[in-house]
Amino acid sequence: MTILVCNEDSYLDAKVFLQEKLDHFRRTMAQTESDAAIANKYTGFGASVWKWIDEAGKWLAKKRSISSIMDKLKGRKGGFYIDKDKVFETEPFALVIDGRTLEYALEPECKLIFLELACLCKAVVCCRVSPLQKALVVSLVKQNVEGAITLAIGDGANDVGMIQAAHLGVGISGVEGLQAARSADIAIAQFKYLQKLLLVHGGWAYARLSKLVLYCFYKNITLYLIQFWFSFDNGFSGQTIFESWIQSCYNIAFTLLQPVALGIFDQFVSARMLDRYPQLYKLGQRSEFYNNKTFLFWITNSFLHSFMIYSLLKTATNESQMLSDGRVVNIWLIGVNLFTIDIILVTLKAVITLNTWTWFTRLAVIGSLVAWLVLFPIYGTVAPMINLSPELYGIPPILYSSAIFWFTLLLVPVLPLVRDFVWK
Image (cartoon, rainbow, N blue to C red):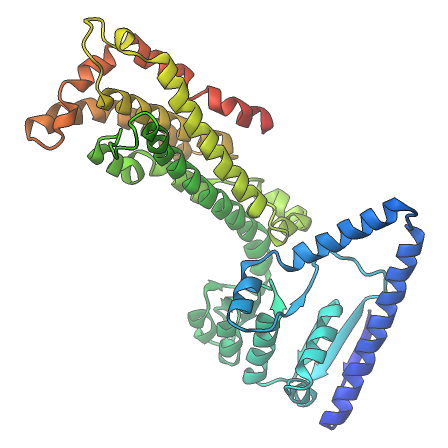
């Protein structure tokens, strides 16, 4: 690397040094981009189209985060935008600055010049700095670089301020005591463990949390939209199709283990792969698993699935088919059937979403289905006797003796997932 050593004796000298180096960077990058534009020049109508697409992409990239919108609402000025994937066709630079010069660089009129220059370098080394200066450098990046996630790692008491200022603090429990470890979000035993913490556990955590959030939205919207589709058949009278106590147990009992399996035990690739190919860490930096497009896709999918299972069951079920003796079917019979189909549907969706199968994953999938099919007849028999859910009186024997009920359980949850399975 070309090393830029900033070791000036006065504030003016430090500001001039940083500004000169920054201007040199800007000229070099402008020339590089100009050469690239000439090499890839388009003519005629195509030139304006590609230019518009490029400008639109840059604008969307800068406006992609909710934090930038919140900054505008709060009256804060937008910060720098750093493209982590952009490769500058220039020689790599490293900036080295000592504590005395850093004090000048952190002055209000100079700190943004220092920050922009630092962001253009491959590495920045701040040497012989005070604990306060460590925290100020982290805060400078945290507050002014849009979309930046900062991590601070240290092993001594002089690192506590920096660790607490960063988004994520990692403390080393070593020979210098436990002050850093106690102040940090995560404590490790040696510096070398940082690689596995970031590349392996960091990659897993991002993928797991992304799936967990998306899946929780999916399964709840899928269930409660059924009530919306039912409103078109009940004249928007407010009548519910699900018994209240059963509906209350949806998240705390019958679909509890599936999110746990996704959020704790899933591994989208093995630890060896993540450690061997650090480029996979960029999946999180690029927001590949969780972004506006993915979120909209899952929400649309939940709308489609809820509509399909309601429409399919409505088509497959009628009074004469459900009850052989000709009695009128009430909405609770249809509601329990729909509730059972929904549990099977969201469980199968979790199966498609999972990448790793463990003993807990099997327990979550099989246990959730068995728990509902076994516990409902017990509850549907006992609860009406104590006047807890009188709507379910006589429902379990009629439902479980119906061939249409078992036929819909095998067919209706599978059809909406055909597209998901083929897509994956």
